[in-house]
Image (cartoon, rainbow, N blue to C red; front, side, top):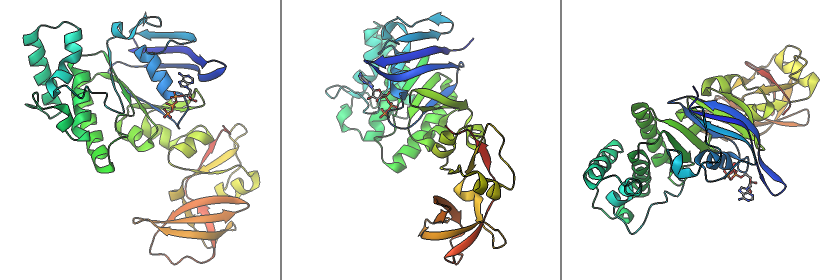
Length: 328
Ligand code: ATP
């Protein structure tokens, strides 16, 4: 049975629809990400799973039980927030033990569970330290320890890495993956960062304007996007809707229901023999490759090429891989 089931969930704020009929099942132990641009409704959806918001329509089930109208404290979820949401006047141990105290867990057990949770996030022995004396990365680990200390059925993450600098974000991302593998707690993770979603998730739901556009494992979504939006959002595909140009580049006619050609920048390559001629507008050296900005039939396209290549003003182009997608 699914750990979490969302059944045609809608959330309206006044006459604005933030979540527009979302149905999806999340399996036990799965790390499931909601990925999408700012304002697409992912945080609202997460808050409904937590019980901080009530759906306008639809149902939310945990392990087959309808929890749509149940308050947050009855749902056995724990949330990790972007801004950590720690109590600044408390020690590390008091922060991690807070949820256990609310649950009236006896002191001796509490102490043991706090120590265990801190060890899990590599902060063993720091119980007595004021939480404000820790770095941002350590504070986020305290927040994570607080969440796992209550041994929730479901962990909810609301962009937990976005306040960390790049190096720390990558390190914390790796630690989070390990922790998830050890604990196996069903997790729902909200992010607008495609790399984070690709690196962490068993499956990703790509959201746009309150709806899920596509759900799948990271590699499947990356390799086989269904829509122009998913192709563009995950991996920054070039989108070519001009039928004649698309056919010329792909070397084949589009299927009737997928009229748009999606080509990733790494798959647009130079080919002197090609009849598709593009004008080079700009070239940027980016280390592993050079990014070309190309003008082609009124479109602006991006191509990644060998940075050692000398690039003339006009080049022939081939797509070494492509995908036909729906226009959405
Ligand atoms: P972000 O990454 O920016 O947080 P998001 O995808 O998580 O984006 P939400 O926070 O879920 O998006 O918001 C979706 C839409 O719903 C936004 O347009 C937002 O302004 C609106 N919204 C969210 N909460 C409320 C509220 N309490 N009242 C009115 N509108 C709201």
